[in-house]
Amino acid sequence: MATIMLTAYGTVETAVEAMKEGAFDYVTKPFDPDDLSHLIRNAAKQISLTEENEILREQIKILGKDAGLNVENVFKFNMSKKTKKANAALTGFGKTKRILLGDTLLDNYDEDQIETVIAHEFGHYKNKHIPKQLLIGTVSSFLTFYLISILHYYSLSWFSFSSIVQISSLPLLALWGGIIGLIETPVTNLISRKFEYEADNYAVFSTKKKEAFIQTLEKLTDQNLGDREPHPFVEWFFYSHPSITNRIENIRSWN
Image 1 (cartoon, rainbow, N blue to C red):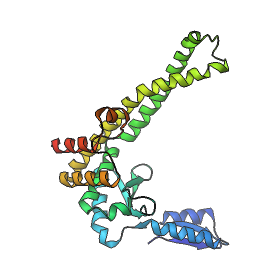
Image 2 (image 1 turned 180 degrees about the horizontal axis):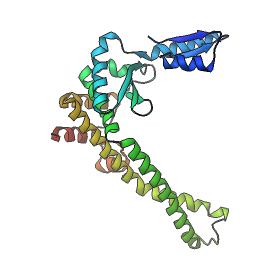
Image 3 (image 1 turned 135 degrees about the vertical axis):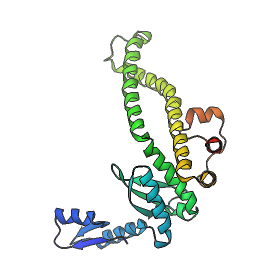
Image 4 (image 1 turned 180 degrees about the vertical axis):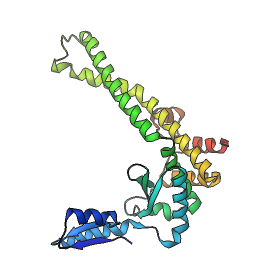
């Protein structure tokens, strides 16, 4: 049940306490009826999973515990009004997470398949992919700006510029940034695809449901209108996720 607390005597302390106790929101009088109606609609979209999904919720909590996470609760949110794509998400700071499951996922996938989706996301946490990506992104950004500055400086004379402070030399920065970006793109995508394979492997390892995961990936690809077999160069250069064909091949070969 989503709870919205209404009061005429609101304070910061009571608002914080209400949110800690699980209130969806905290509203003080006087309030706009239209705003309250909008808030109620939003609360209805993010309701906790019903009792018929209790087994799924408990299984997700077990998977979270195995990954070193404390799953606080599992919620359903309304995606079908805006898209047919199926998705799930983890929210929260540190080791305490809330799981959000789109209604498009719950309505079209069985519990085993949903478990593998969540296990894949837990795999990213277990393998510390987020801090790794932050570190890679930070180092990459500093290195990129450093290389741009060096290349910009030494290429000024090629275009008859005399100083880096000349406004007319600014397009050189964009030129070198574009060239370096072209080199970095396949490298960062290669790392991202490696992380996806690792998360896939963790999903199979933690759930022991290889076939259910393969079925899930196939359904997600069709539902999200993905390309099953892109040209190898297109996948190598542009794709941050492996193609469905390569992911399934990897899963089938994993022991």
